[in-house]
Length: 373
Figure 1: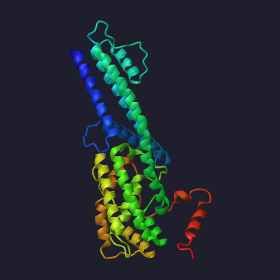
Figure 2: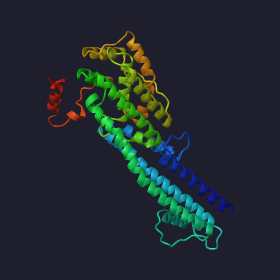
Figure 3: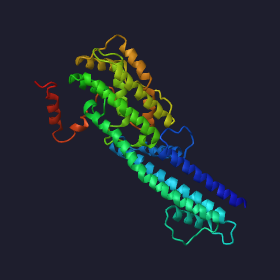
């Protein structure tokens, strides 16, 4: 009798836990603040092992390709974990219901029956012997059908959100370089006599930040999905937008600050909320991303294209802005193994220049007049 009660109780607990987790991951459109979740435990455990193996690989395309597998694979593993746990939970319940009967089947037989019922196979070679067992068999068949239907409807939504995120990141390539940098973004607009369009650009990224926050809080597994190119990522794009907004907020002559203020606020909200979801604490950088020497080079290159600080003390003001978001970005970078971009562009060609005749395409674009006569 005690074994029956224990088996049924354990099975019911497993069923309830999985159903709650499925509801929170697939249907609940908000962040779950509860610490102990099956999906959260699974992702943290598997990511810990996956990232440890990735760190043993040399940096480069091989490591990036290995890391890119984790996001989609983790979703498959999550579905398998849900299904197997439900099958085991219902199997325990069936075994508990039949344990006191005259021809009690073994636990393995009840687990086999649970699996065939979950996937609605209906072989009929093993059947429940009690009324309660029959009721649970119907419930399990409905649970299996419902989970499969939810998964089929969930995957297109997941990849649609991923595609919308990546579309903006790809557009950043021509404006800010590959990898992106604040200097390239500001210099490109200034050199093209398009500083007035910078506000519209930052407005679009404010909307992008809101969409990313909503989607990644509802579906945290999206943070592990990598971009199409190794030198691009949602974290690098967000860092560049934050850097650019911070520079504009410090004051550039002839540049408005309102939209930069709105975009900075939205970007910081994204950063803070994502660190909370992943359970991270701000990290202390060993060296700053923008030292005094590099700041002087940065501002010198901006001055060459006509972007002058509006007031003195811009360096200290920029450093203050950076302390409000860089430690959180560094924590995300270390955890997700995503490299943060530099403030200044690298010497490597951008992604749109890395094919045949790429150099010619760049020269033609650079030589095109900003205002045709």
